[in-house]
Image 1 (cartoon, protein in one colour):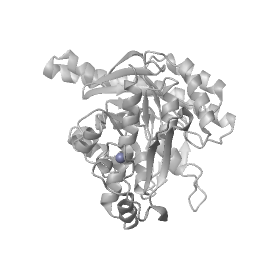
Image 2 (tube, protein in one colour; image 1 turned 90 degrees about the vertical axis):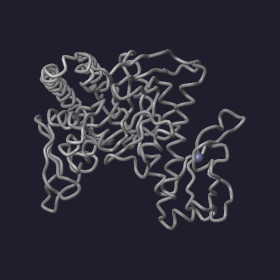
Image 3 (cartoon, protein in one colour; image 1 turned 60 degrees about the horizontal axis):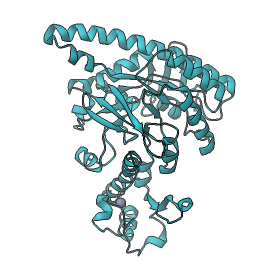
Image 4 (cartoon, protein in one colour; image 1 turned 60 degrees about the vertical axis):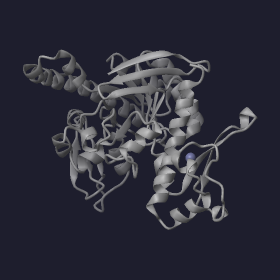
Length: 390
Ligand SMILES: [Zn+2]
């Protein structure tokens, strides 16, 4: 993976390009989330039509079902799901903690047990015990053949006490070192194997996915500084900001993002994990974030909620509003979702009343079209940010 920071545009936003063997990703970029290997209800060609350049897969879900071994047999996730473009996979750490943290079995046993070696968790599907280590999580992502992989980290809840967050930071730093070491050992082995067949060095270099760091530290600036400084020493190809969008306010989130802008290397891509609304994204790009992912556009669409741009003469009035088309006021609304939107759903002229009806009837077409609209809104926002007076 290669990252070229092209320049800052007139409004001070970083514009760049990530080159992977499966394609080029223009940054800042939004990555639609394909939790179990599909961006819910949307086909790969539709993603491309919307302008998607990279999608995200969830290691936790894919490991549980159908299992990375099966996906490897197909040549990796991008062959299995026929997206065939760049893919980033998360480490599963966030799901382990968000689906299990604080929850207890009937016997009072915690669903998640962290030790220095790794994390034991119970599947949210059937309650069976599983174990992730930094090494096993790298191996799963190698089997998925992701282009960008994330290390196992510890994600404390947003209201965690400072000493708990400090422990999470220390463990995440240690696990990142182990992830890097393990990936390097695996790629060297892989290189020697591939070389004997192809003698093609270029191929073997590209064959290694890019391991990003995940800076933790909650809303504590000294912990963020400590975590970032230790992780930057490892000289990784990219840096993510984790542990945000977990219940803190937008201003708390942006304060940490602004701090990380100063702490992280300028020549590496920065990825703000799990954020956020179009407004969050717009603001975070001003603090040097290059990559985003979020389930909001797809999840909200399934509940009849769409993002609509507010275009106003007055700058302070501009932005995005969330409209719930299930509300009775839309029952006979003949307007499209957004008359100026160029997404397939708006361009075809479907009315808000039709969507109100489809979502109420749980008709799958309604979900698909609203998902297309919301994804388009995000992708178009990022496209405009990139092209703004580049
Ligand atoms: Zn639209």
